[in-house]
Image (tube, rainbow, N blue to C red; front, top):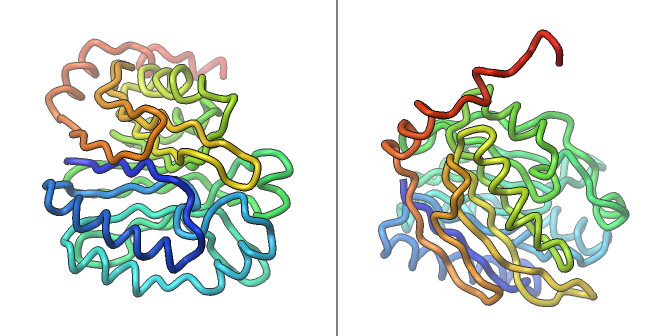
Amino acid sequence: MRLALMQSAPVSGLTDGYARLAEEAVAASGSGADLLITPEMFLSGYNIGAAAVRQAAEQVDRTRLSDIARRNKVALLVGLPESDGDAIYNSCLLVDATGAIAACYRKTHLFGDLDRDQFSAGDRLSPIVNLAGWKVGFAICYDIEFPEVARHLALAGAEAILVPTANMEPFETVCTRLVPARAEENAVFVAYINQVGPENGLTYCGLSCLVGPDGNDLARAGKGTETLLADLDRSHLDRVRRAATHLRDRRSDLY
């Protein structure tokens, strides 16, 4: 499965978000990508305040996202605000290449007052979804910094963990150290898709990547806007898993 990892600058509201997504979907489709992944809260902006987040969540149009996916025959994993009753969630929505909604995951681990002032926490970890012959799970930004999240998804059958993020300076080591560790200790691919540049006092650090199940980079962005193309390779996964020992050597009788 070919992934297009969209490292982008923050948008200026939903209109800009839809336009950029549509443009990237055309490019991804033309490059043979099966799935285009955006950063966390891509569609509306992330550090925009509780009132703006709520307004955007109430105006998100899933039909429009389905139309973009269907027209371009490319699946989308889009970071966006989600409204459910009085609660607002930091979510990612998977739309398959036919335009059908395949999954929605809500961020479970909230990062400081920045998240807690804007969102409610999700109450369950990601489902495992079959997409283009691969079993994939999701995490959002801070979630992947908890080893229990990746381990749970790996034990549930995930072959790849897809992580929209909005990671900011000075936390670059999450991108370069923790994400590869999550991949290697669980023998899974991890795709980590970040924003880049300033937004209301934050500076996002880029360094988006696809890391292989051996912990080595398969693709790595710098600190500018770019879309990485990278492939999930079944033979690579099988080869690493034949040699990997962490999952089978766990002492589940102790923890």
